[in-house]
Length: 344
Image (cartoon, rainbow, N blue to C red):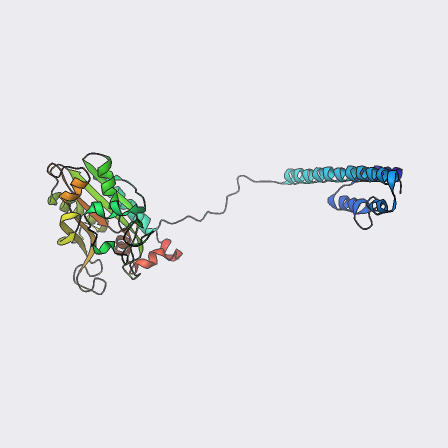
């Protein structure tokens, strides 16, 4: 095969490529001219090994020129056929824009998220601002500044998820209370905030506990704030959540960062205070911890305890949601059961 033969084959291939009407015909032309076994132009490659000198160089140039021209023409025609096919399909497509769509499946609000939003709405009516803080905290803000000494059991590695060794460094916050300190350190009273967010403790999962759960911390600091203000606020909020007829009681307790400290209970929604298995026969269910902010905590945050006073509280939206909606096991809230979520 000579260079003239290759040029003639290339001209013939280009004419055939220009006349093909579909992808199958184009592939047939490619195989006939460029297939490694049986292609008329590709066959010239085997002859290159049998010629020498100037003749080999000339045949090589002719082969590369013919193969390049045919390959380029094949690619160009391939693009043209694909574009034409798309345009034909588009022009033939009909769309009735008045035809109704299939109904979209609506999502459902998670009961914990719904409870948190309701708590935020209730406190917004009382003038509280909802703020957020970091989930990874340091020991200073999570414990030290909240009047928790090094020997406090909450700081033990059996209770807290430390990130860099037990008892030191960074940790997954055990409550949203550190935002009390961050808020007071960043400004001056009055303060009225709530802090919703996730927290973690080394609790064994059971019907009333999860190692990761939600908390809404609250803080009010101003001149002349008393226990009566705390009591009135908690009773109002809990009755907004559980109903105006629901019994609410406060009882003495102890927390390092409040003095005095109080826990709030609501009457069991099943037995209404008579005593049953759900409330372990007590007739009451603990719902939150609270108290007057300890003067040492105020002083640590740069607030004059002789001029200002305040109260703080922490409630668990998970438990509140379970009580409000008759969920007997808080673990059900996180099992992604659509039958539960579709109720909301």
